[in-house]
Length: 158
Image (tube, rainbow, N blue to C red; front, top):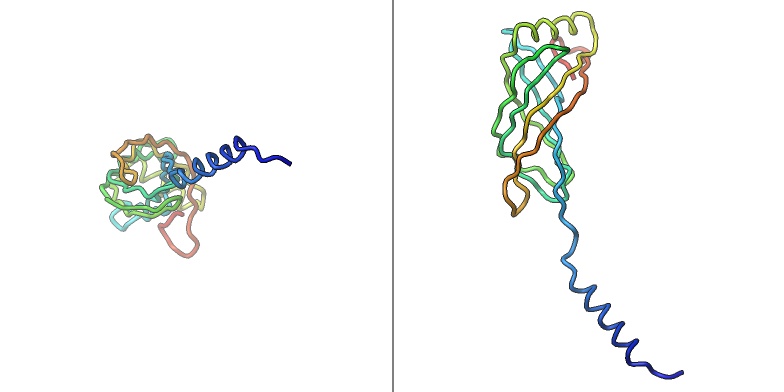
């Protein structure tokens, strides 16, 4: 068997190119938002635990949240917050946002609580987040989901 320098050269070049990789790929994916818990206060106002989910492969700092809430077919108001919260890659965290809902939305929630029924809701708006070492970006959010009454916790939907 004869030594062929061109094969050795190709093998060395392949090893050099492999060693020059930048490590794991960092990708930025659209985040998600959902209501984890909605608590109705004695004054009729809501405390909303908003779950922010980072699907990116790098940490992201969530700077601003502005999401219109609709319960049933009624507009409830807008969840607005500036959490300045850093969430790790492919992780989630929860922020609390207070909302003074519209009277029609209060009635929809009260009816769902009194009847023990599911409450369907929609979130639509934007979340501003800054990926690690990059510029801030605004992401459009649109989600639909439902909440159910929490057993043993009056006025709480999860």
